[in-house]
Image (tube, rainbow, N blue to C red; front, side, top):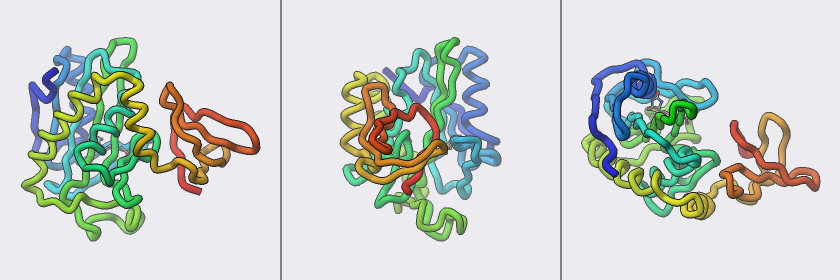
Length: 223
Ligand code: BTN
């Protein structure tokens, strides 16, 4: 299934996710892609912002109609796939290289209306000096040049085309194979425990004080 057409590209935009959502509400077709060289109000998970120096990152949002339930995880697997075997996943969908975040994913949707927008930011050409002091040591780039952003997008769309239509079991087994949290001590809003994998619904399993919990959404941190 073709993804990435029609495509709207902005030199500067507030947020590609915001534009893609607007297009979704106006009836744009499955596979519509919004890209930008620069965002002035890039959105991250948990209400955070997402910033990248102009022209250094792949910034894109894809509209999917009838998206799979595991879309956020499938997208993480697709991004990891384009990076290579060394990429790992920090549940639910941070993509890590050597333990540092190289890509973020923000899936937003209207399940009732049958669509989702998945926004992806990949630090294709960012160097360590491009990250703010708070992100230093926690974020990384792919070490590529800005001219690699477009070819990276082409590879990403190919990976996405196969992972968004993959069976849940295939997505889950790919997530498990790249699980950066497995066996690690983690904390979240409600407590802390040891990460014990991902269940059949894509929830993070955590062992805590003799109990096993399944975290549905939200943020976990390495303790
Ligand atoms: C995260 O917090 O890790 C998710 C970050 C998602 C950032 C991307 S950049 C392209 C798209 N447009 C946005 O406003 N956000 C996503």
